[in-house]
Image 1 (cartoon, helix red, strand yellow):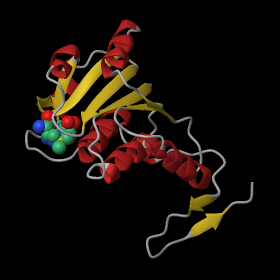
Image 2 (cartoon, protein in one colour):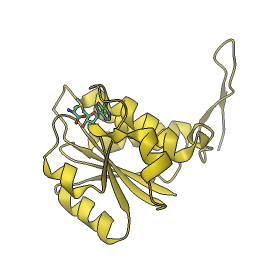
Image 3 (spheres, rainbow, N blue to C red):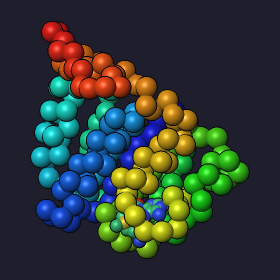
Length: 177
Ligand code: SAM
């Protein structure tokens, strides 16, 4: 299964944390790649720093100017394009009843209002409830439906720090590579 994210838009300062968190969720939950528009290279440094400390999982960031090219290329290569939006069909109905088998999925999330073409160019528009909320929450739930919970048990390569899960405190192992 290969899942990539296309994050559309970024309002300077206001979206800084949200944009970083979208990328962190994509990395932590096992996506291969995130395409981002309207951001500068500092996001790459932030994720490189997280990789350095917490490990690697072949996660890539590409900053793109033309989101439509990404979407069209994805479709041309046989991938499924799913836009995550409050206006779409219910995520569970989609994965239980509608989804065709396809192991290459591009998930689109917005920062603010996305261009109206996104709704038409995507193969499907799916929602995580029909109330407005957050792209971070919506993305996490959609990834959980795709990976069936396995995204919470991934092993990252060559970490400097590794958490030893504890019900009563913080245990972190420092690993000498
Ligand atoms: N009106 C927008 C929409 O189309 O969902 C809400 C904009 S919201 C600030 C930014 C992003 O969060 C949206 O582009 C969408 O990807 C995601 N989002 C917000 N609420 C959602 C929901 N209920 N279901 C799925 N995605 C949602």
